Length: 502
Image 1 (cartoon, helix red, strand yellow):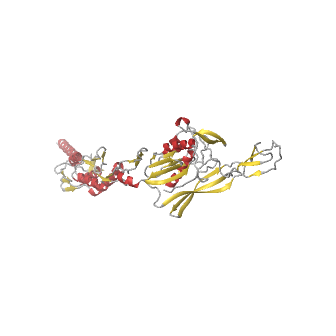
Image 2: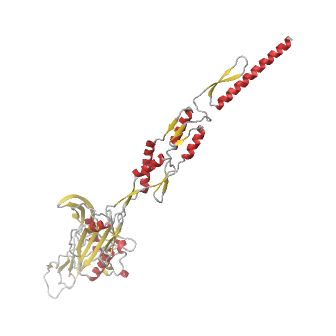
Image 3: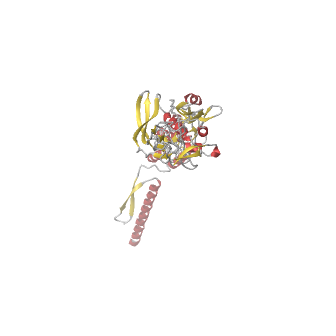
């Protein structure tokens, strides 16, 4: 009897233990389902069983129904997970802006805000009503930055009208058509983006709008603004061949249009001066020796152009002086060219203005005139000229004696007084009215001298004794025709300088 009572007592205690364990297991399962956490393990000293003590947190269970609204979307009656899925589906980002040909997706500036909202939603009790709105102020600032980026990408600068060509036959200039500038209306674009966001149209494609702005110079204005900005004149000789060469070079230059940033090359413009092109033989120096070669005289064209370029306000990138100073321009102010079809001393300059220019050249009789037509690059009232000064003379050359038995025995005759070479320094002088604004070094030049030439008779005596005399030179001026230099030689020629201000 006692044994049966003890057995029933043990069975009852075992059932209590089992029920207790089942209860603990049920509590643990319920805690997992309803978001209980922060478990703390403790040890039962009697049964050596490990039990878990749980503490409830503030996290809303996924199965709990929420009472919330985000913008225009009502999420009430949904779980947190369902609410998140619903928002992610309706708030899918794909907002674009197009200029008509180029479409650009705007950076997603909503996802970050939604993540913050979902975090708050999951931490708020389900029975507490919630109403969330996007931060439109921060979105506006983000849209402004993106509009600035699009403006840099799409804005088009206006194109000013400028000279396009010159017709030598009619003497007419033609001008390009101006183009308006296109400027993105950034303020309106930001408003459009913000309105689309407020309407939750995150897949909206927004057409960008542009304002048109007239350029600084229209075609009509260009016709009025173009004028003669530099001109220079020199006198040629009556030598037919030389003037033929000058005329060919003039025709090659006349009407040349030089765009902004473009470099002019005299040699490339005229090409090689050969007889096939119609260039005639004329006096030329080659290594100090007088020869006859096609192209003599073209250096007077390059020199005249050089002065017109300087007076226009431009600067040369290449200029060379002759070995022997020409007489058609002041010493230190010439521009020698020579070309063999591949290389040679050249005259070059760059159009540093903001509009195209036209070179005009003419030869009427013995008057050579070259001008530059364009938009003035100098300030109103400004004028640029060249000033040259001799630095020193070169050493005199020994006299050259020539035997002439036609002269009386023992007499001499000076046939060429020769010239003294020298070194010259030239300056670019900028004036406003009569006042010199600035003066800056332009270039240096050095010229060879020519020896004095004396004819004499020291070999053949006449039948009558004639007293020895020393005759005066017949002329103290340069020869009637100074030689010119073509490929490998310097182009020079006589004449009278006749500058003409623009």
